[in-house]
Amino acid sequence: MEHNYPIKRIIDDEGLLLDASFEKQIDKRLVKDLYYHMLRVRAFDRKAINLQRQGRLGTYAPFEGQEAAQVGSALALNADDWVFPTYRDHGVTITFGKSMVQTFLYWNGRVEGCVVPPDLNIFPPAVPIATQIPHAAGAAWAEKRRGTKNAAIAYFGDGATSEGDFHEGLNFASVFKVPVVFFNQNNGYAISVPTEKQMNSATIAQKSVAYGLPGLRIDGNDCFVVYFETKKAFDYARAGNGPTLIEAVTWRKGAHTTADDPSKYRSEKQGEDIADPLARLELFMKNYGYWDDEWVQATKEKTNSEVEAAVEEMEKFPPPNVEDVFNHVYAEMPAQIAEQKEAYLSHLGRQ
Ligand SMILES: Cc1ncc(C[n+]2csc(CCOP(=O)(O)OP(=O)(O)O)c2C)c(N)n1
Ligand SMILES: [Mg+2]
Image 1 (cartoon, helix red, strand yellow):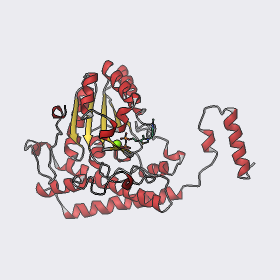
Image 2: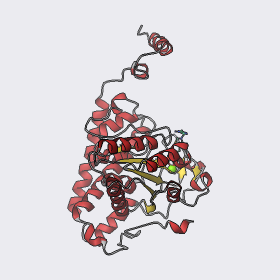
Image 3: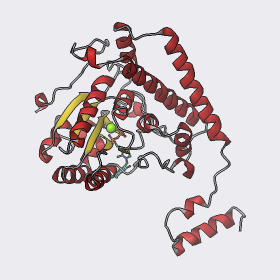
Image 4: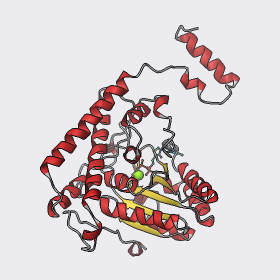
């Protein structure tokens, strides 16, 4: 079956165009945007891991290796579209406009990091696997009923495709022909379980057939194919044709989270031959005359200092109010939670 879904690419591992017609479609603005945002979110990601190791951030889910998939797709959206991310998609949400400070606060377990800015249609990161997929289908249905041209995108991993929510979401979205893009990042693993142990289908893209949807398999480490194919899927959705399933084949370079040790289930050598998405874009820039030493240097300094400033701001936040843990669970606090709250506050000597 796999031959039906060959992996689409625009550039190869050496940053050379495989299809010369793209030379006209790729312009300086796009190259700079992709490079800037990929550099920016990588700086964020690496800093977050360091902070966690220093005890300054809670458990963190890194996305290094997936920058092309996340940034390329996020740049293809319109400002009024809806984003349904997972716990690994802060490369998406930061590119789409969520602040780094808020994102750090989220990973420090702070309620302030969970409040979505009113001008951004971003749902909170879904930690329960695949639950965001029917939500995205629902949001897209609402936009369709309201008669807007807004669409939704659901991000999810390879593991999520084995959950019932994936199938329900795709089925409903297809039946109601709603404007949603199902964007799968196949990073090879669901924690310690490799894709081939998790499913017997050769690809995730082929699952689209069951729901009567277009499906495609792309190189998730090629920012250009991600950008152009996501844009195409959004145009298709906005034109009233319904959903698309995109499988972006990528690689999680690091651990599942900072609480995980991948050496327990995969060898160091695995993934060594996969070209880094940022390095590939750099090669492309050098091959086609987009490389500008001065601009690159200035961009690196700018993104690093933005990250440092965000850390400073996050750490200046007043200590959390422990009552938040109890106050925001229900609209009206049930007796059991009230009891637990009282017991905890008295344990802290505050009552
Ligand atoms: C409903 C549910 N079951 C199990 C878990 C535990 N869990 C957390 S992450 C994860 C793996 C998900 O893998 P994948 O969908 O490939 O996403 P990735 O972490 O690779 O980005 C699992 C099983 C969960 N969070 N929610
Ligand atoms: Mg995965």
